[in-house]
Length: 216
Image 1: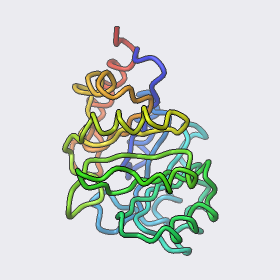
Image 2 (image 1 turned 135 degrees about the vertical axis):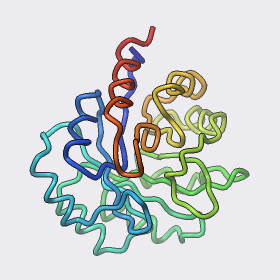
Image 3 (image 1 turned 30 degrees about the vertical axis):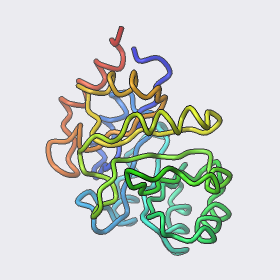
Image 4 (image 1 turned 120 degrees about the vertical axis):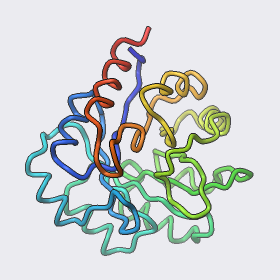
């Protein structure tokens, strides 16, 4: 077992896949509401499949630089967390608005950090959880490429009072190495457990479960 590790399975588009993720030991299920993503759902689609989901695990809505309408819809849908991806050019005042609307305990900030850029200390009071994903100039996550694990470890070590979620190119085969390299206690998997974008591979989810519970 990888002790103390919480796993989020993201990019879910069906109740069947969400239930399989829960059986695999996921502590959080992620649903993407970004129209440009191949894993995107509408809020109406989510409400339809949500009726078939158990109360646990917790659920996260994934948004990209949302407006008030999108945030309100996610809140009304009953999400435990709202994960917001954004470019570093977004004004701090807007990030503060997100924090005030959602609350630091429920807000996950996922800044799109270029390789040479670290998280601004000004963001730390705004959220309790920060997700660091692989940087891609044209995309907000979902690349399937591993990120800078040393950069993640540096942030986690510098601010141990926050929850740091490791994301980017993780799969059952490299998860243990990623945790060993970063010290992460929270990992986000998406394309690494897929058969196709938005379609989870249940055999890969089972492999993840086996890895989680039998890791020495």
